[in-house]
Length: 474
Image: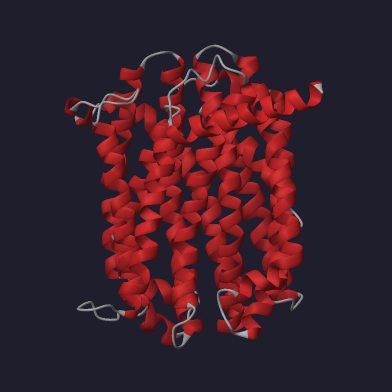
């Protein structure tokens, strides 16, 4: 009898926390229970990251049903691989923003948190202008450099120009969400991605296939729809920044460059950007290696598998971001033990999530791939990739939480050093050895990916236990 009373109580409590997390009600995350704090942050963060992965999947779905779909799929995949360098800039800056804003919020200084966030935006806009210009000028050359055939490069140049030219929108979407996450308001970050994705889902078929007075742009239409969708998400973010309804109270004076603070932010952001550039360049190299050893179909299969993988891994990354916010805020509040406990509790949750994803890919990978293309060869390669990649998912998830914890503490150098060794000194040479010298082709690349991720997780755990991150000042 007592059990029947207790269970509804727990269920009621869960739904209460769920509703609170989606509403984005602000609470002191350094004083409530760790489990409750993780759930409040993790639910909107996981939904936010799931929506980020939907962009590529929606594009992939619609262009996968175009004529010459292998060229279209390859263009989307290779462009996403190049855009990961821009994502690195965006993620690195957002990590710095999350760390600094979370620390100031933990110190109960929301004005300093607000100013730090705006100074990060100044840095982002200044840096991204150059990237956008280069992307507009060298779009076709970028595709050729990535291993695309001349026909694919000609087919996809306009797509790359629009995506690269509008990359400032990508950076702002990531960065401003990082600011909100650091402040503990993950719900606004989640909603901005929902708005962006709903717009993209509606606009993609319109611009790709045409509707009324709007002509059919084909592959280029996917880039137009995605850029407009993300732009609407950024508009929603800006509205909330200036609404005055959140812990962050923005003033125009915060946009005047404060070079002392900019220098402090860059000190945290630079290694964080480099950290993700290392990983991104590795992904770019692997994509080129698959394209040259597996041809157009091998590349299309690999890109399909990656998009599917990221759809499930990004929510896990959202869950790990909860650890980053809790570490930053608790260090700011002086609760070092609580910061560490938050990390290990988050790891328990991610273990369960990644185990479920592994089972799905091992059993249903072929069905997932078939949803995006009817090319049997592409489906076969994508299915094989998913099965191999999923072997390391559980330990990969553990590594994500530990990496986020370092970044949330502002110790962005530690995961950067781990990435240099794991990606550049191990993964790339190992993939090259298997793919080319042992003639394993794309399968060799697939094997190299989880091998490196296991090494990252082990190294991160050892260094986390040493505790140097606890003394980081931001």
